[in-house]
Image (cartoon, rainbow, N blue to C red; front, side, top):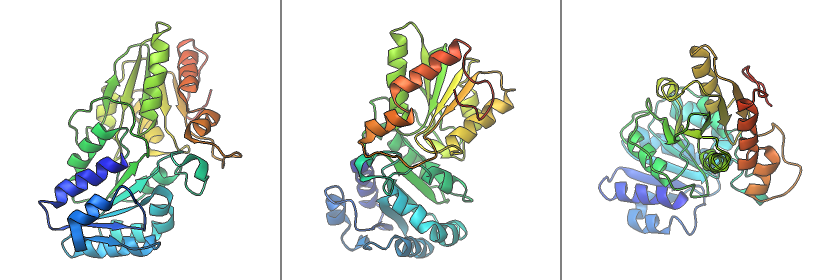
Length: 314
């Protein structure tokens, strides 16, 4: 998806001279075509992300449409004060791109993992958080936010994600069924959609039909659109991040509004730094966020052994 968002920006920049792309000395092998296309509108800010964010805010105030690009934890945690004060407080339409959602950077360790970024960004006023699960969702998110006056954070995984289509949506309607089924609902966002689709395939082999509901924009959470997809079946919420993330909170609020009739469990990463070095799939498996773990939680809920209260973990 890194390559795809660069393509989208390049196409947009070819017809809009206001677009400026800022990078924190990252993106090599992906950003060169954009650099050639933008010329002086492409700026390598060096390893100085906080300064990059402040410059992006100033460019937005001057009538430009800036995109700022870095690895997710460097784009968010390192720059929180500047994002809060220079972008959100001033309501500047800066597009922040954080690459490497969740465990995407695997063996590079906790300094490069992004498990708290969505929660941090969702706490800021007026900041839209997009968390696409594949290129089709990224295209729709980009289009939905193209002319939005609010700042936005694009949480992008390194992986391409599973191949599935996405309908046109707005921030208010950004929830749809990537797979239909009536026995259990797997609610996910970002890379977790791919894991849920694999879990649903495994369950289908056992005669269990699982719906996979994708939520590619998690802040503001599309509560009505999400609730309309619920059928009364048990719900497993899956997010590759810590508890309290905007997907988990949004799903819980939607269920509460419906009277909490569905059996429910929330699958998130343990709130601890990994004690081992491993690739992305190894870390997902250890965190209980791989297809096998998701399918096991779905079976437990269907069998009545799962949690029925918000915040519980099976």
